[in-house]
Length: 76
Image (cartoon, rainbow, N blue to C red; front, side, top):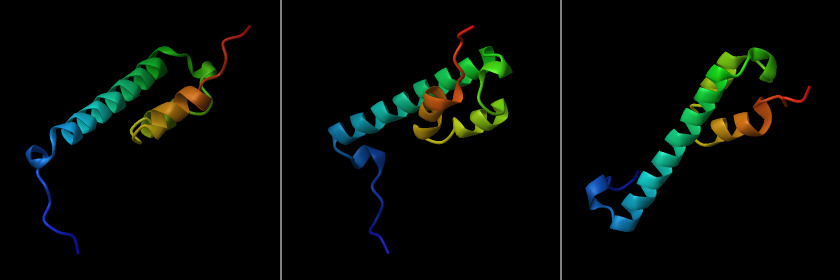
């Protein structure tokens, strides 16, 4: 059993700032991954696009995995 939950406003300013920075980073990563998936042809994506869209919602790990291993090179 845990103690009473803290409200966001009860947290110290540094903790609030870190939470906000983390949330912004997640939204930027996810937005970039979703935008890239929308614009990139299916032939340049490793695996099905809908799978990567779903994985992009996994905090940090999903978008980073997409950029690290989900895209095929564009070499000709």
